Length: 185
Length: 105
Image 1 (tube, one colour):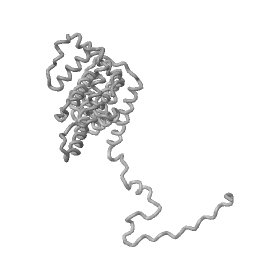
Image 2: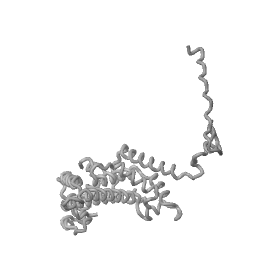
Image 3: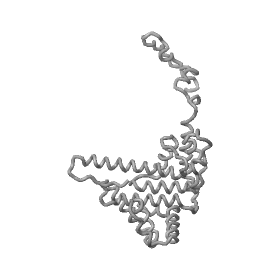
Image 4: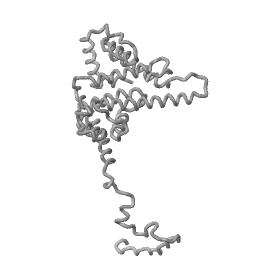
């Protein structure tokens, strides 16, 4: 499953990253493939109009043509997820630059594209609605998101380790079964 | 990547949420309930990509080079550059139309 590490696959140091990726991809289980799809679906949600299969396809292309090297010790799915993240970040950046360029002559302050803000608002609202009956999951998401944003884990004291783990399992189940993706705009 | 121009912070918050959800998927210990249709869909995508890579990384000797076929099977007409002079190659005389066969009538 997730222990598909580069070091497990490579026969020697001389073997290229792309060969290792191709071989590892061939050994992915149905469970891994499902995870890959969910990861692509989640990442594609950052960009309004982006399609998960196109994003995954492009990430695979980068991994297989050698433009992204698979580092030693990194699980394959983490590696592919990282490529998708940087691809989406690049496109978000590109959109922002376009907006900035368009506004360069005007007196309006530069801002993030309006469609992305609206999309972000709708997605956050959809998650809040989806887990409306599960306060622990919402608290867990909020706490972890704050960590990603560089803040403190404010909700941690409210949840015991046991409740936290149970919430994490429920959250994982909802994502892996595709229930959450079907709910997002 | 927090965008300082994302004044409401919505985009940054949504991105952080996606990072959280991605982390949960990667760390999930449970085997997800497999939908074979979905898994097959992703496998097809992976196989197509891997097959294309295989085709692109064939040894150079296996690749058809431009002109190779012409050397083996020359064209009916004179090969380009075969004549040393700059004079245009004379056009072949018009071939008269073949009489239609009787059974066509």
